Amino acid sequence: MRALLLALALLVAAPVAGHAQTTPLVSGTPTSPTPMVPPVADELEVMKALQGGRIAGRITIPDQRAANLIQPAGRAWRDFHNVTLAWVGGIAVLGMLAILVAFRLSKGRIPIEGGPSGRTIQRFNLLERTNHWMVASCFIILALSGLNLTFGRHILLPLVGPEAFTLISQWGKYAHNFLAFPFTLGLVLMLLLWVKDNIPNGRDVAWFKAGGGLIGNAHPDSERFNGGQKAIFWITILGGGAVAVTGYMLVFPFMFTDIAGMQLSHMIHSIVSVLMIAVMLAHIYIGSIGMEGASVAMTTGQVDLNWAKQHHSLWVEQELAKGRGADAPAAAKAAGAD
Amino acid sequence: MARMKFLLDAERCIECNACVTACKNEHEVPWGINRRRVVTINDGKPGERSISMACMHCTDAPCAAVCPVSCFYTTADAVVLHDKDLCIGCGYCFYACPFGAPQYPRLGNFGGRGKMDKCTYCAGGPQADNTEAEYIQYGSNRLAEGKLPLCAEMCSTKALLAGDGEVIAQIYRERVQKRGYGSGAWGWRTAYRETVAI
Image (cartoon, rainbow over all chains, first blue to last red; front, side):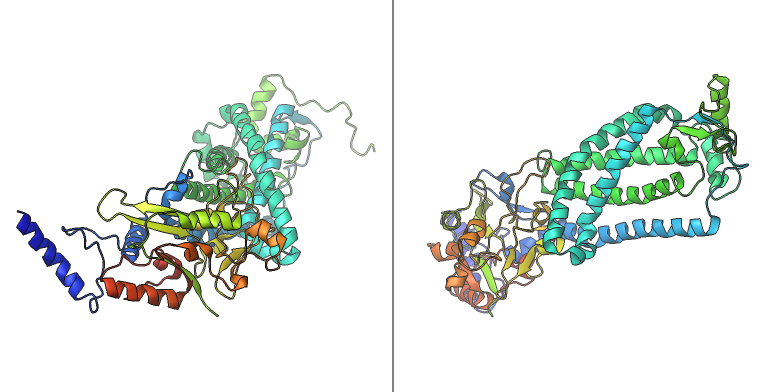
């Protein structure tokens, strides 16, 4: 048995030693008598890169993350960050802006049918409005500081110079990290306040089929929230939830996950974010300059009765039936009295 | 100009960690930061190898490619350095780096990582060579004094080689030819997209 092993060892070792000068296959451990997979550096790197794996070992310093010797996935993350994210984000944001400009130019501002009545009805109470603006203001700062991390170096950096750009980005990072908390709180409140009016039903299908009064000219019956608003609601809740969860993974680095998890968190966080930014651009447009009588819903909370009847006919009926009438405000003056 | 590289001959590394210690001492690297470390793979099994790893000063460096504030630059010697006055401590370079080289003073929450620190190839930083300011921020600048990185200079078995890529590759090649085996240049394919052809 021993002789056999020795013979085997010689058989393996001899050609390696003998042909080392000529054969390119110099690898492995000649002390080991049995053939085994040698840890040839470049082969192992290629293998791990193809598998998306890591070359890791044991380390004697406290930082156990340092036990990763080579993580080829970093290259994939780099491609995502520099290529995929830049393209998806750029197309989503600029594409949506282009659509909105085209929409405005072709269809103009959506008017209140028959003009404002002068009589108003309460649409959102103070809590709903305050919460909306807390989420909205957080979202805008989060969006701008987030976009800055991807696009700032190409757009802002050449304009303001490296020192000023670092200052902006540093404060943007602080804002991004801390505003995550009021943003998430607002999302939870938003869910509690509005979920009962946002359960999808058959009416939403009809609303979308009719083009929602936005693309089409019909005004399908709608309850408190129409199909489009329900879509915005669920995009905010689900998308915002995904962004919040992955964001907390990033803001508490390596507490819940390892390097692969950090990379994945960033990928989900950034892609969902840029898509949400695109959706919110449309939301901002239709809630402000895109539609007559819409913005007051979230400022004073009082919308014109004609606007409400046009867009939320069933909701108006329900409110009037509850006795929450559309009184003329106390300070109302007859037209032309000023 | 030379194209500076590191090359680790795993057949020679005895995991003494002198390179790690030399680096920490030379640059007075703070507690918790390791610009260089020794990783042992296949520990206790056949084919065990120890590899000393730090920033490899990559060709087309991933850290520089993803940095949101573009604080990285490559010197004439192909050493990848960064400007700590511009770094915002976002951690992106750590996600992109194949070698786990970027280090942060704190792994604090709320983005409180502090400025990134990494191996400078003993070449300091953007401050004037061998000034107090440069030493505090980046450590000593041996390259400006005509010396090579201390980790490689200290290596008792000369497993870790530093210097011009062509020269150290030739030393390694001769070693492999003489002893008849070698496990390749760790990280070269990833960092420089080439291997040492024997």
